[in-house]
Image 1: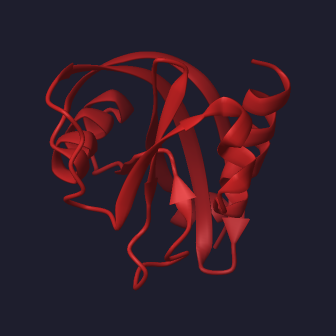
Image 2 (image 1 turned 60 degrees about the horizontal axis):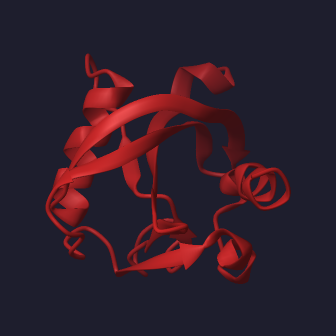
Amino acid sequence: MSDTDNLIEVAAGVIVEDGRYLITQRFKAAPRGGLWEFPGGKRHPGESLQDCLRRELKEELDITVDVGEELHRIRHAYPDGAVALHFYRCTILNGRPRSLGNEAYRWVPRAQLSEFSFPEANRPFILELINHP
């Protein structure tokens, strides 16, 4: 079995308001629990990454978003499987974030993103944001 046989496709939303990024904390009981991430989730079979992101952000944060350009993509192998992460610029169209499918959320200035613990797969994108705005 190759990495692509069990590859999990994940869409993540990069939402910026007033110079601050929206990040969410994974439930403690989840894989990589307690870590912070850009909100999003796993793509369902037959679902586009953009539709996945709209669905996940509605389920997790009760917000409706416009999904814009893809900002970054990366593949990463964890011991329990490989992920393909797709980061998209998003804009909130309706609603204010509420923690429905996560432990917590925060609005964080770009310079402070490094103060939060993110899953390993997110680190290259975080470093890119901090070093090359």
